[in-house]
Length: 147
Image (tube, rainbow, N blue to C red; front, top):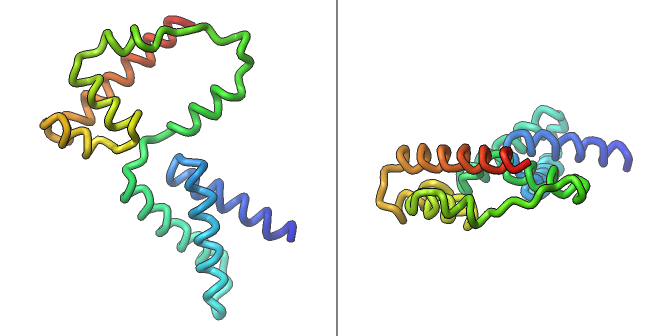
């Protein structure tokens, strides 16, 4: 049983490396283990990781994950609250251009990705990604100045 848990934990970490999403990593790893167990002839660990990589690739393609969104949340949760300086998020967001705010709202806060944000704003996909990236860098700079 311990060997299974060690393999599962390694697989979850591998899938997280591919998706940057802890929540879906466990689901994808479970699905990979299930499909691997259904294949009675081949019991190679390479096959297990191959199945997991394919499932993770489909999930990333289907959902357009934004990198490190979950990692940043986990890091914030682990910090001691006494060391956190309050940052006026609304003020930082209001300093952004109206379209940039809309892009961040649709792509990140609503979790719909840049494709949907491009449709909403009427901008090209590449322009939407570029504006979203610039807005995130601006906000990151604002938050770092506050600390």
